[in-house]
Image (cartoon, rainbow, N blue to C red; front, side, top):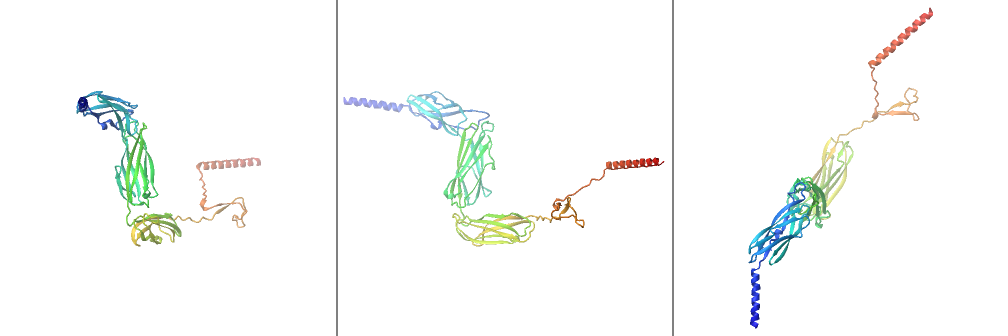
Amino acid sequence: MVSKINYVILTALLVLLSVSLVSAAVTVETADLKKVVNYESLEDNDDEMAVSYSISLTNSGTTNESLSLSLQNLAAGYDLTVTPSILQLAAGVSQDITVSGNIPVDEDQGIHTVGKLKVTSASGDGLYDLQTDVESMVDIKRIYVYVNGNLEDKVTSSQDKVKDLKPGDEIELRFEIENLFDNNYDEGDLEGEITLTLDDSDFGDDEIDESENFDLQAGDSTSEKDLVFAFQIPEEAEEADYTLDLKLEAEDGNTASYDLDWEMDLEVQREKDDIRVAELEVYPLELSCTLDQEVKVSVRVVNYGSDRQRDSALTVVNSDLSLNQKFEFELERGDSNNNYFTKDYSFTIGKELKVGTYPITATAFINHDEVMDKEIVQLTIKKCLVVEPAVEAEEVENNTGSSADGIPSSTSGKNTDKISSSAVVRTFEDPYTSEDVFIAILVAVFVLVLAMIVVFAIILLRR
């Protein structure tokens, strides 16, 4: 009896094992379930785009399978079908199915689940997420890196490093960004913003947190001068690599949004000996009539180097101005709080100078006389405009008497008008015209005729 029961159990196990050995195992290539979407081909007023892509199915079992395929729970705006809907898949064989149709063009950049693929077989049902991966329609083509006004690097990919920067360097980042839409697409114009951030206590107190807006038409890219960020490596920045985070965000005419994240490494290094004339200001920069004129000078010297400088010096000179100043001082390491020296003073120009420019030169030294840096400011001398003394005023009597010698009186109490040389009054008389002469002759003839009539009348009366 027991042996019979054992036989039945053994038979059942063998049946189950045989079923499992011959059962089908249909798998779906998961990478195929995600469709990469790029809007570059859109034109005119397209509000949807056609897609078609393949998904691979594999029967890894030992028996043939009859499969039923369908799409379910499609998101709004997605009109997709799968072909074939019925598939005979032999054991050990792979075959592609096709998902095709139209999808909307207002999806944000990124991954979106748009529906499910249902695969029904004898062994059961399988549900798989269908996804789209919308690519960005804006790109950073390159970043031009200017250091102290000179082009030093062109960054073309994230995590590139800008090397050998020094504290005090003036940095300009000039962005060339590209709108990837076709220039015929009506909704392809972009509005966006780029933000730069660097927040690291070792970098110094001047953290970077700047943003700039941009507008970019479809198919266009910004020029090197359109989008510029400027900042300075802080004087107190420590030697290190710093990560500058760049974030680009944009929106097209369909309000679909795109973003791009970049990282740029800034390598800051300090030389052993590096002191500089960080500021040289002269006021005024232009003079005329220079005799006894006062000129003010302000100078700032900074140690950017890694070493302390005990024997530093500064000279400010110009022989034509009789200017020859020298100052000696000590500077702490570049990353300390006492790494600078400032001097404000004035001097007087004791003689008239010729018209021209006079360079005032500030030179920084280490070890008393080893030149490290030099800055020059041009003082300009212009032509002296001498104002002539005013001519003695001419007095015009206005209803007043005259003195005994006939000279108009100017005593107080008299009402006189004074005309100075600064307001010269000139009078002009017009010459007689021919019309005036003619009228004068007529008057003379009339007077003569009248006189003759009077004479004849007198003669007649006497008779």
